[in-house]
Length: 229
Image (tube, rainbow, N blue to C red; front, side, top):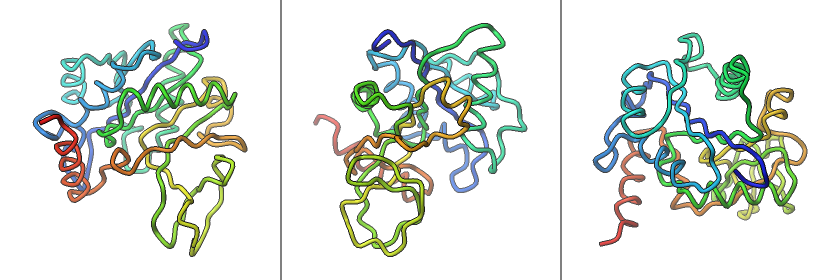
């Protein structure tokens, strides 16, 4: 809890993965990939509850063994390549409210960001509360000449439009490690973004979002490198 607000962390982890089979439970530095997000969430001083949202019974079993809670199984219709994480979060909200339970803030932790840590979660929550924003997304510095996604302006606000041939290397891009939003806001807005979405900068070495086998290898290298010798 922070500022009197109850906080739910959701780790969305579907079973299907084309580029890396069984990606969310593939061994990463000796442990299932999802473990690192579960551990980061459990290490947070603000999160009141941590759940894994999945349709896969094997992922559910492993997640439970790692200390996460699976209060319900996701419907298979929400586990396709085309299903957005927002749809999964809205379904999670509906389930909790059907049980007459709700929270004030939702934190989405993708298991494909194993280098994000507990301090990142807590610092981001503090920033969002202090700024009085209804949503926050994690970003890292963009070093590419072109980006085709949302970017962050010089006031730290996410701008929802496309930019081409970007010359300003100080612009930031989403890294997928953290999405935080007000419970009521996401229900009505059905998006993580609005005019005052706050950007939470993270260093490149903790911003890897695993999508390809190469990403997986790079992330393992970075994780091994930061471990105490």
